[in-house]
Length: 583
Image (tube, rainbow, N blue to C red; front, side, top):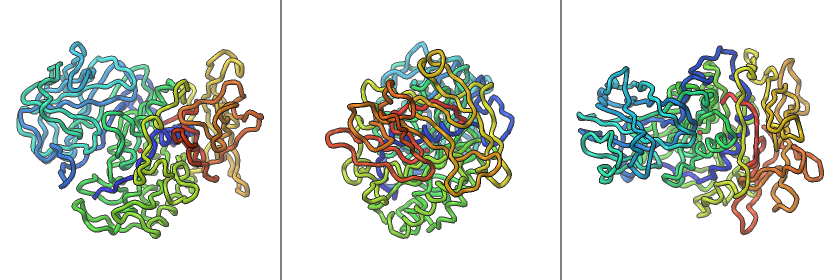
């Protein structure tokens, strides 16, 4: 049975992940870039869903994956993360049992519900043909259609299956409504024929891709239900990858975000209900996405929690050790680096009090050991320390009560969105001439040559307003944050190595509600009256990463929970401008 995972603030996860991504500056290897790897003019994934084998577990919401479709049209609405001038759609039969025949397909700008904007409907062709047959285990991508789209815009994809499909590959938890109608309704703009049958899953469509001058690569969020958005509001697009996409769009980044999370997914073992194991699906669901530059990995809690538990109908999960999980993470890192993709490791969040036999002291010790390795081994290019961001300072093995749905204190919508009147500007990726690859010594993932970082400067600080400049690693002024590189005390500096980053964060301006050192209220941005990287008194507030004490504090009484600053992260809503190669 799927664990009732804790409902954490998507805004916090997005803030932590944005910071970790901003500290990654180039592909992990010196592999020669290609247009498919995220440079202007190449294809980039702008939306995605990780597919699972057809299943309909007892007691779960009904889906159509096992019964399939017969002379029916399926209409699916997706929100893309980055815009472009042309669009193409990826159709998947990865877990189908027979060839999947799509008779006709269209893409259009979404209107209300199942309706589409009439003049935006485009017929999708596959190698110039109206229909396509997808072999079992395969994906096929449509030809490009001219349809200028903006970041965060919603598109509607309609597929017609004239014959009987049999079981179809699908994504179980879409958190949005999928519609079905009889016959060929691919060009029907009204949506009236689709009102009788709906579902909350995605079918046969696994990706939307864009190209154009406004695209420059993708971040893939890879993981389990926290990435997939479990218990977030259906139709609201407030999963943490959605929030990350919004922060990037607000910062005028050309990077997209693709969600490759599957609820209940495990790193080391397959599940009938929760998909193929992470070490096997990572290559297809993350690294094969066009334009991918970075991957954010948040996975392992279900291996720990479900390990050794009774079979609730989804298959037995073996008991795992910390060493086995670490070896699994190493496998993901090796695959990513072999493709020249940077990978951000997220620590596993606290789970004390979880039901269904998930929590025990022995299981929590496994989580602790894996987190220590993620933080301190240097294997990941950067670390998003969600454990420190979300844990309760009074009981570090538990979530902060404001983030724990099991206690009835699930964050409300106002806690997930920036406060009114505040800027949510984030960071911008560099142009091709501003990039400088990092070079890695064999066997030493922590040994890096310093590389360029891009930062946005105000008129008073550096030349013309809004001018972008590249400077070498050292001290990088990044709007509200000064990032410097500092060697850990007592450690030996290897020739050519880059020490760990240290963030100096400017707190909220005078008169603001007091929060933990180094943190800002959710959605806030620093006061422009103070120099970057300083407090009102002029002293910088340093936040060391990857190691350092937790900064989480309970939210002030009568106010939304503020987004705590984990080690190495920015407070929610803080601005961060920098370069990237990027659940």
